[in-house]
Length: 125
Image (cartoon, rainbow, N blue to C red; front, side, top):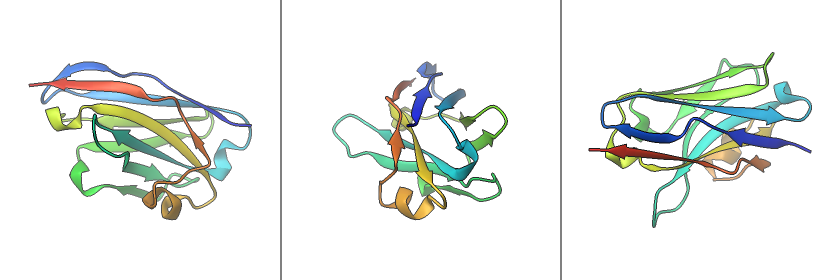
């Protein structure tokens, strides 16, 4: 069984930065692709970014525009989302997700094997 625990959310001013770590509790972290999703009030959950098991293939949503960077540490079983140049439109609950193997195809369909509980990010103007 796998458990994902996000942290690092909070209130930040527009143009500020925030880093969201996600701890993977379980075995074989290196066999999972990892992703981040977000859900704003009144909207559906949407894909933000993903990284493959080895860390050399990254995907991101168009709205990221190079502002967010996803990274992973296979020795520490963590994945992080570094968010810069934040905008009020980035306000949402951010979810960490894990998909066995090559996960981008599933992430693109909004699917994953495991989900975290989410962490709130609020960007003030």
